[in-house]
Length: 375
Image (cartoon, rainbow, N blue to C red):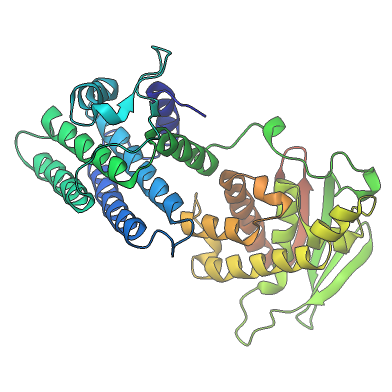
């Protein structure tokens, strides 16, 4: 994928959650990412063979840094295209970067061949100094001007050159990353993992499942009047409500259209295709989901089960991606996982508070809700 600067800016703007007047958090973010770039590039050059996949880390950090720079330029009402034109077409980096044949997509591609560049250590030091200069200018009466922005870009592209990485690769990877994290696709753009299977092998499109805690402290599940699964306790000495964690599996089913655990409970595995039955719905898939649910629960417990939260940390979302790698659900964007967790834990908190209730799930609308048990 080749992105124009205009296309990248559109994506960056959509995913910018900061207030338009906020400059300080943008500068802090840029400073942090610049430090991460310096650390990653240094390790890449020093231990390229030992650290498999480290190049991807460098691309990731460079992309995050450029996102913050784009956000900064937008707030300063400065043309990013004009800055790039001066730096790439006229500056010392011009030989390493070239426009595409399409005049509406300048500076989108970068030659993959090696370019003459300054010493890598010198490039990293220049990036650090340029980032510090942005801070200094923001605190002075003169404020940040075009000069400081150009100096930063020149240092930034020297780092790209020293790392022998394509600028287009940086833009494309970052656009994909931030879209996955912040943009919730339209329903018809989201995966439906069992749509092509017989109805008896599909997770129910709508469901209502009762959760009831009895005097013995155990939680029981009932679906269509029939008890399912085993009664659950917290399985820990200090009570924390884990006995209600099946809510999260049902949130996975309703919002992600995925839950090996729920398939096992309802006996709706996709047995008509052996590779799905074996590779997605059976033992290991269920273990992965149970392990994931327990891991996220341990994080949620320290955050009041996400009460009052409108987002999930990127560290948790990245951890989830690692957990489910190789399974069909890895196709779900981080934004959808975020919705599943926030909505699922909203139901969990009500269930825990009321010692039971009804979970109402709707796969068509990708929603999960709480309803009290009628007397």
